[in-house]
Image (tube, rainbow, N blue to C red):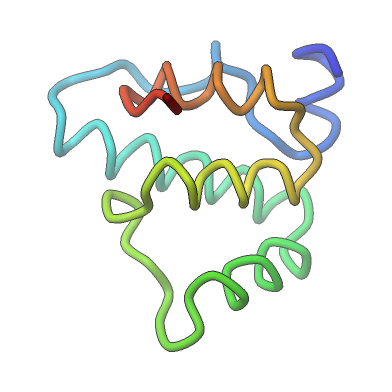
Amino acid sequence: MSVTTMARSGCPRCSDLPAHDGPKRAFSERGTFILNKLAQRDAPKLSTVLADLYRDDQPDPEDIGTFEWQTILAFMGASDEEVKDVQMRMGRPWR
């Protein structure tokens, strides 16, 4: 899946992510940005995966770990390469 296809699948392109301004702020802002883009594309699907991962509460984007981001993005249609790319841009690479 190319970056263009990723945008069509609902996953934000890395070039669309806000600039990195610091660790805590970056996680929150970039996470919020990504969740908003995914919700614009397919809100019911995003709600489903978030409910599966976080049964009791909607997560704060800065508290979403790399595994959870991988799960959310993959469920929304991103390839492994795209997931890694988004995580690198967020400053939380999958190891």
